[in-house]
Picture 1 (spheres, rainbow, N blue to C red):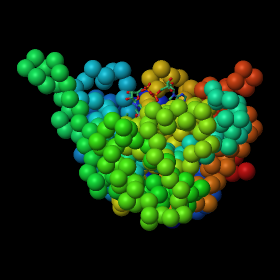
Picture 2 (tube, rainbow, N blue to C red):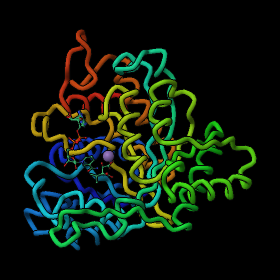
Picture 3 (tube, protein in one colour):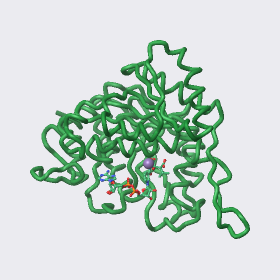
Picture 4 (tube, protein in one colour):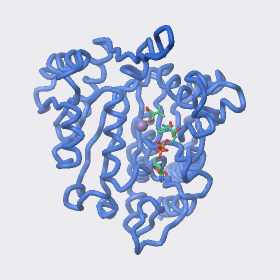
Length: 357
Ligand code: NAD
Ligand code: IPM
Ligand code: MN
């Protein structure tokens, strides 16, 4: 199979882990006889420095012309004081919106050999396998107005906007994913306060009869945040709006041992998917070879599965990661007092070696 993959390394550890994913994919292509062509583009802070914009036209064109997109992470203290249009995060948000990547799949899978690395008890997290389905192109992130207001600009407004269609398509996606998993969907909202959440609940009720074999319930987001820590194994698929999904997925990452373990896929109805780790550019460890590359490597496995339909190849990467963890290799974020700590590139080499075994 011949595919073109856009690679947008971005800033901080984004660039470090993007290299890991490329080198793992090269091993996969050799092993399974595929041809992957990688085309790099700038996004985020590095694009602001080079072109004066966080998403240059050239980058968007490369993405549109590719079969899938791999993205590292954007952002950093250097650009934190910038106005909103000139922030690195704006580049990522514009990319998601431009490609209509409304469905963000964030699987939370606990590898048994890492269950001890979680801050939660072994018996609480061992066996957790859930998927957060986050709406990615609406809600508070994109509603307008979003600005300082009033004569003295001493008030502020952000807008939570959703159309019924936007809610319908993500809820539909949540049910579809639940149907091919353990057939349980939890819709998370704040319907006791927000009108948008009340429309969200209505839509869930309307779509549910199309999936009679899927058991579903509604939970308020504050309760859901608590339940995730209390008893995460009660969840299969969680479907929720943009900001709630952002927060719940970082929270859920701690079951896996580290934010550096969580991959994601962002999908549209057609067109290329975007695959990126859930974590950010981690300025605190950038440039030190400390980043855990597994979230990015597992994101590339999601790309193989969801964009290229290469399930066997995706499973090969997942098994390689599992084997390396079983052998006890750890980056600093998942290490305990008796495991020797290895670097980003060493971890990548271990995964590559496990793939060729
Ligand atoms: P972050 O995810 O970058 O880091 C949070 C903590 O997790 C840090 O202590 C970091 O060292 C650790 N961490 C994250 N990824 C890791 C990995 N792979 N291996 C080991 N440790 C890891 O979140 P933050 O510090 O709040 O944000 C930093 C910047 O990243 C901000 O500019 C933010 O906007 C941006 N950000 C970007 C994305 C993205 O590009 N998708 C996502 C989240 C945050
Ligand atoms: C994520 C990030 C982004 C988001 C930021 C960087 C815009 O936190 O992908 O989770 O909030 O969606
Ligand atoms: Mn986030």
